[in-house]
Image (cartoon, rainbow, N blue to C red):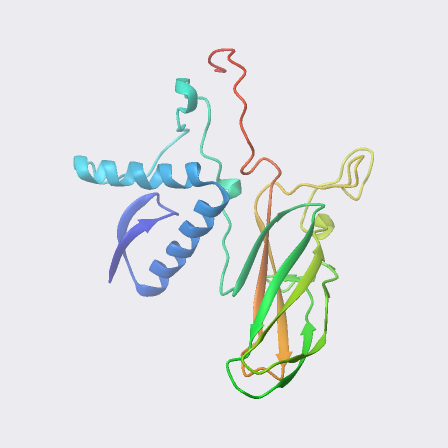
Amino acid sequence: MFYGYCHESNRMRAMDYSDFITNMQTGYSNIYSNPGAAMQPMVEALTNMMRGTGGSPRTGKQSRHRHGCGCSERDCSCSCCIRCADVVEYARCGETRRIPITFDNDTRRERDVTLQIGNFATESGQDVGWQGSLSETQFKLPPCGEKTVLLTVNVDCGRLGVPGTPNDPNGSDNQGRRSVDACKVVYATLRADGCTIRPIVIAVAVLPDHCGSHHAGCGCGCCC
């Protein structure tokens, strides 16, 4: 048994190995996307435990008390659940992401490598229709050398459950962009024939536009 922070109950508790690893991955994902919001509940749980309150789960609305006015609640929409991925790329709707992947040859023999990228799909298997392109699909990997290949993908949120707008039933705004209401994760598999490695699982975590944004205080006092 392991003892750690549970993101579902917002408290410290005992858990098995699988549950512990899942919560660790969730914690790292949250810290990467929104460090301040991710650390606050864990600090509160540890504080409650030290005070002997048992770290009871939160009820109702509770804020982070940013700027002292208590009007900013913890935003769970920026939390991403990413499973079994070798490469993780964070993005937003409408972006074009270029993901560098470097292949190393630790032998003294030249290798002929052929790459193939699979379809991008959600964890449930829904194909989102993204077209991933590789800067090279065939190359020679020199002895004791390396090669960096760029995977380019257009983050189109049309099939991620984004609701439409009055002007465009497909969900696009005037700039042809969409925004998800919570983090959505899409996966693709990259196969490298000629390399003695298993297929590489690539995850693209699509965040809402407000996640990780810079907050500019207007000095207008408490907003509540």
